[in-house]
Every structure is written in structure tokens, then in C-alpha cells.
Length: 161
Image (tube, rainbow, N blue to C red; front, side):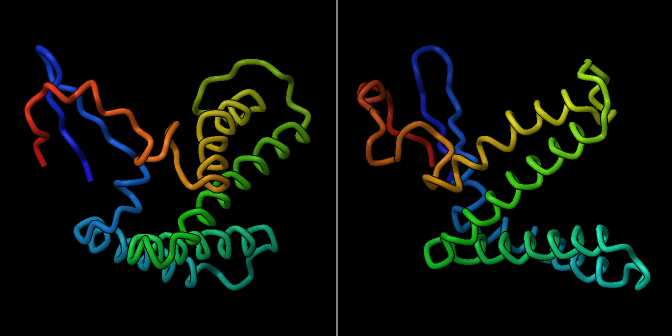
């Protein structure tokens, strides 16, 4: 759920990615689920004479799609699916970093659009580590909702929902 809270002269918009993606929104589910299923079906029509690496990638994407659909369908019952999906994303970024280091490219800055060990490390730090955190403790933020200190908003008007 996206919450807007008034604060002083301006407004502050607080969005928690886990709440948005795994919050049980029916609109989000019915928007993303058909697209994810379409991706899975199209990957099945990929040429049959593909390499082992392409097969592993297709199975990984299919697994990720199934986990995301389960997590979006019923976040309370399938809470483990969201954590498993984020764990899979972490493993992909870790494998990407290992592949780039093993490729023998020098450790130098390259444009963001080009593969390289530095870009792989940045991807692991900026995307992989938060996904690992969600996998291990079940949240992206610092504190769970029950522990958040909302006393600073006590004098503000009630939140818009």
C-alpha cells in the first residue's frame, strides 16, 4: 500500500517496494501475471537445440516467474515465494560477478551499458545485496512496520489512503 503523509510545508511520499510488489494488490497481480505467463510460454518456444547454458537460464526465468506469481497472488500464504524469488535474483547477480571476474577483463570503469567486473560488482551491491537482505529477514527497510516510529506524524493531519 502506498501511503502519503503530510509533513510540514511539503509532502513526503513513502513507498516500500515489498509492500507494493508483495502487498496483495489485485490490480498489480492481474497486470503482471498475464505478462509473466506470456514470457514463460514464449521461452518454451525457444529453439529446441539450445545450449545447456540457455536451458539453465530459461529454467531460472521460469522458476522466477512462478515464484513471483505465487507471491503476488497470496502474499500471506506464499510469503516464502517472494523470499525465494529475491534469493534467485541475488544468485543471478553473484553468478554474473563471478563470470565477469573469470572472463579476465581488467578492473576498470566501463560505460554502464557494457558488461564488466566493476558493473557486475555495482549490480551485486545495489540490487543483489538488498535482495539477499529480503531473502534472509523478509524486508527491505530498516525496521518492521510494528517497530517504526511514527510519532513525528502525530501532529499531522491523518494520512491519505
